[in-house]
Length: 249
Image (cartoon, rainbow, N blue to C red; front, side):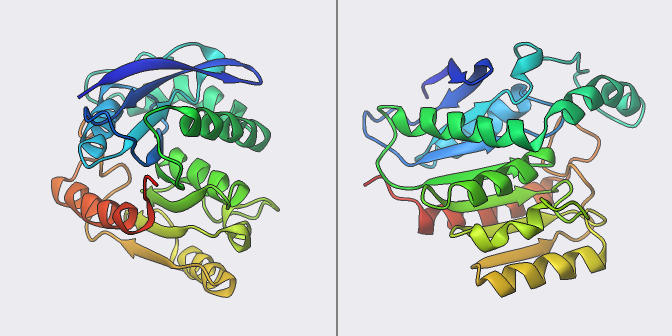
């Protein structure tokens, strides 16, 4: 399967990214995969390759590119309770610097690059995000309803907050179908209810689901949160979502 590192022009420089696509010579639906807080690394490249095997051109940008090429932080091979605090000490300044203004500026650049690739078809694109990336995916889908047909978020970050631009307040702008796969404790019951009410009121075609027994980070095999059965459930939700919403025509 063809894979490569690409450079995405943005308003603040060039963002390095990983790209994977089927080796068929045909055009395929585009998918923008937003990284979790730990950043672009082999674990996410593996997910991109697996998704590409199902017929998609998958682009995984280094969201932290303003601070350097991936890997921006020094990550252990396995992120567990014994080193998680030290890892987040490196990452929190990067996360806090990634303002909504930067998210939206990057979303414009990422989608423009993705849809311009010769391997990508003319149809709508899909978004998938993990942890922090689920928030970025929802913001991107709300900002580009004409381009995004599907958005999925797994063990999401702060989707419901008191901020005026909280992601749950943006859902009236969505035209995409949505799946949100939650770990236990990702959102309070009140937060889930508020999110679902907002999606219902906006008429969004969506599912929200709490994955039983899963903890935050359950899709990531390089962390102590990894849960193989929850990862498979994630694929069982993501692939049909993209299958029914994305075309290469």
